[in-house]
Length: 248
Ligand SMILES: NC(=O)c1ccc[n+]([C@@H]2O[C@H](COP(=O)([O-])OP(=O)(O)OC[C@H]3O[C@@H](n4cnc5c(N)ncnc54)[C@H](OP(=O)(O)O)[C@@H]3O)[C@@H](O)[C@H]2O)c1
Image 1 (cartoon, rainbow, N blue to C red):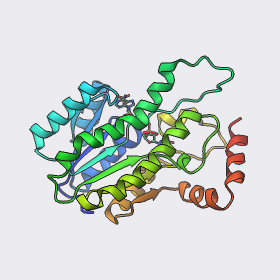
Image 2: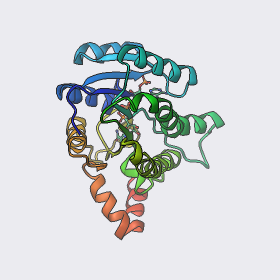
Image 3: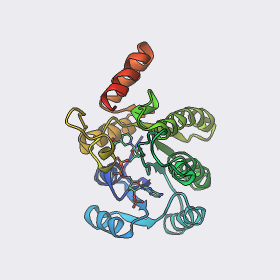
């Protein structure tokens, strides 16, 4: 797809992968709007990369409606919605103190919010000549990481949702992309950062994503996620055991 002059909204655009997407996509000539909860980091990224920002906690219905209203008023349409905001929590279920809200929050941010936002923005996306939705899942959508049981489940769910919506939206000409990042060097990676884990630099990972968008590659398994996809098909137990052993 063409990126020049496209209006692109990135949730979680004030840090990590989302902020790097803002930088690289604006270099392609797109008009970028980032969102997130932290006004200070939003303003910092917006100033640094010359992009717009709208504060939004994706788990809050009122914030979602406000985001929709602001995008509609300021731009009149949306070309690309990038559902990137996400969190990862490590849990040992038998040992940790885990509350209902811990579990709900992770599922809400990673799955319910991208789905409800996509639904809400459909009318604005339909005003675009080449609309697209991006779901950022993970290589862990192919095989779960036992240390992050909820997170892995949310990403597998989004992998299925992306495939289903890609099929459903064909008639509306809305492209559905899925980015499956490998372990990538951002704050989220502090959950599994050890000397033995090779993290992909965020600029290289996002460059693969941008290339994938431009070539209409709908399932973008970046870096090591490509190998995870293949091995998960031919030797799923082997890969699962590797992950389980590495992160005891
Ligand atoms: N890094 C990796 O190794 C890796 C691997 C595979 C997949 N991913 C996926 O890539 C995406 C981005 O991750 P990252 O590595 O860039 O993480 P990150 O550096 O921790 O950034 C997370 C972003 O999400 C936003 N966010 C969190 N909760 C939010 C909420 N309730 N409402 C709105 N925004 C919220 C944060 O902004 P605020 O705190 O200001 O809200 C921040 O901008 C996630 O979906 C993650 O699951 C990452």
